Length: 174
Image (cartoon, rainbow, N blue to C red):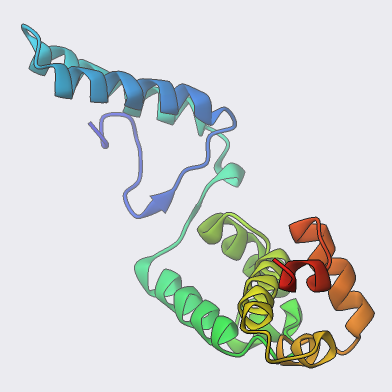
């Protein structure tokens, strides 16, 4: 089926309207679990419909691009390193050069792989780590801001509040 519709394996496809895909997958699941009469035929037809529509939805190759498993692994390792060292300053240009990618290509691949921009991913990870430290009630907000990579305590407080909708102080009082 994949070759029939000129789809490429080991290739990320990002359709402009993913709800079409979601609906077909839902119908495939219903057939599979219902086991109604002739379910296998309908299951196979729906599966073929999925690939057909995927090929139609992804005609624009700029929407999709090839990411081999080695590249994905490199990004996974870098993300692990980032999350293990959230107190360090992480700039997109530095992350990109660390794994020999241009800044633009790095950003695009990161966002496609993880569904979030690298900067936003780091911010959310830092806030999650800060929540862990706040729950321990052993550190001041200033100490936690430094431990999570912020050089400015007030910037940390603003970002914390933008993610959690409460201040770090309010969070630690829960």
